[in-house]
Length: 409
Image 1 (spheres, rainbow, N blue to C red):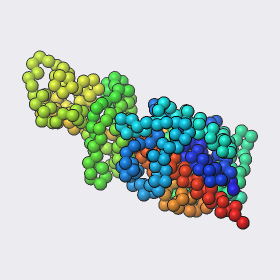
Image 2: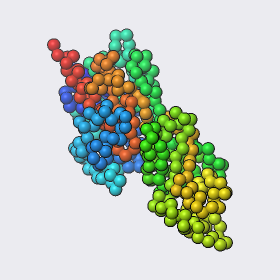
Image 3: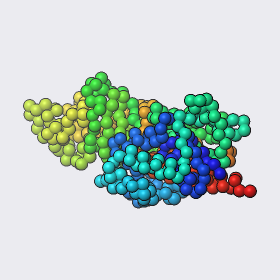
Image 4: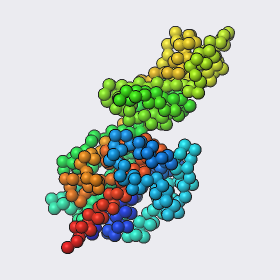
């Protein structure tokens, strides 16, 4: 019973581990020269494995796709993920934000230990093999340096990623191959992404790369509820990205798609009530400049002061009460998401309605899907990696069981 895994990211590697543990012969193919490239990139600033919050809060992060992603995560929850890492010799800790990291914060030691264990268990790796679909007999086609090769498998797990960071292998080329087989695929879109803002030349050249912290973002969701998040974000030459922008990126993206633009409201001093701020700004200014007055009375300096001048009229700047209101609710218009290739992750993918409860494609018996190529999205904070590992594990187990049934007399 032979299971072929296509894709060497976290979902594919976990599918390989799950399948070989069940007893299948496992071969893993990847188009890149080595596996786990995006995994390593994700760990450059500290590998965020998962999150320590309650399982109910954790599952809520998957929004409208919770019902589809929940079975996989409940079968491999954050606690099980930490145990899995420990078995690889990697201890973890809970950070102040509740996020869970390896004690050394690095991805490379975990990946090395993981690959060593997979090879010891018999998983065969084939890199520089680009999947090109199926031939007329249903065999898998791979383009390698020596030309096209054909591979027969009892079951297949597709773990090809989304469309973000294509230079690391997730280029979305699989979309056309599955669409040609009439597999429903929701168009890929950027998730956890930045957005364009029509900055003045001054902001673009003077403040690109500057963090804006600590602030709160408020905006209306599609259902009419109010979303408020506190944290920081970064000014870019194109607009904004990072931190709390990523937290609400799905809502922003959907609003832009529906209305052509989205407005978020910035509270530049979230720890100070409006009435007190208005009183502080109403103090006599004397000969002090507005910049000095803002710094002394409101703690507004640098990039925050520049944002005020960028958005607020001179009339408002001259009126302490109206200025206080603007500082507490500064409108910022976002016009378009940054390109998919720049996004941290991908929304869209293989529709869950096209899959059964085992993540097998209904119209392609024996073909399972896992990871970011499925139609779900989640914010950063460990939710992305956990779901990739959990769906990979589920798909790998079910693919191995499917191959066992096929191999039975």
